[in-house]
Image (tube, rainbow over all chains, first blue to last red; front, side, top):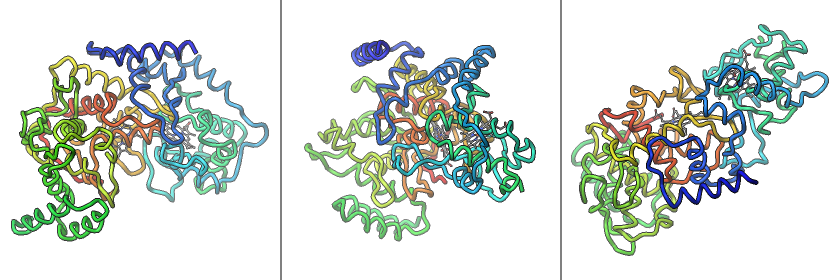
Length: 201
Length: 266
């Protein structure tokens, strides 16, 4: 509430007097962002509010001090609700989620759900060739890392919140943001790890 | 393009530009057939040239007296010298913002009306896409020299730079998440490192561009808008300080490049 008020006051000042100093402060940049975007479709204005991860990574140009990063990563990891029991879902469904980049954009229908768009950044499965390279190859991930409880737990939590392991990772937080459901993430775990998944053939 | 063909095209372009919106789709297709193998970008330039001269709006005026930064009526080389600060508007403007400014001031059109469809589609391109293509074409071969001396120009650059590295939106991306490291791809698309002069020059000297994947002329305002859409943010306001400063930052990174647009892209 208090920050909202401060923001409003700051915005009013901005409108009245455009600043002329060359380098805008962090606060100015955030206020200008809130002023110059408009909610559209499912993309509401709260998507512009930086949480601690975005804030620290922005201020530190993606290179935060190691101790700061460690502490926030630990908080992010602790906040992940890991379901009890097996985390291995259905790799066939996981394949669909991995290879769909749909969802969460202002021009899309939220009722239609979302994919993970994993292929945009990762090589997965030898059979598919249209993949990006922002992230490492995940081909044969289960062969390399095994498919036991620990591997399952790592992949589940990494997809849920990549920032729990690497604070300024370029990978989105698919669970934290509500992009993917618990079941979808379990299916992805299976697609990456299950010995029967084409990813491990 | 053969010279006689060009004349026929110009005539057709005039008819096209003057036609009511509803009739435009089929005419556009007809027109595209006439252009044949020539670059579709050329088509947008020709139609844009006619729209530039067409009298419109409450003041029934054309855009021919528009001051794009080199004085009223000078289009040659103007695009390559943008964005820059304009004292009459007291702000930094890119080509599209300045074209809009001229629609408002010379033609007497309301911002709302003139901005009703800033982004067209393959069936029905927007007026801005034609006009931007035409204005850009008149800078072919000119060195890119965006404004870098006025305090507001410096500020726009700095703001654009800060925005380029700011994490935002549902997916925590900054522009640098995808345009920050050499040799990376999204899907099969190569991602230029837009903070570096080399790749920035190659990218920025060829916008606006006919995008084959969209079958459409796309502008710089669209490009920034569309990357924010992928970033799962709300929508940046067209011509806002955020978008114009981003365009300033990218263009300053590309300064010195020889402008060669409008281009044709994937």
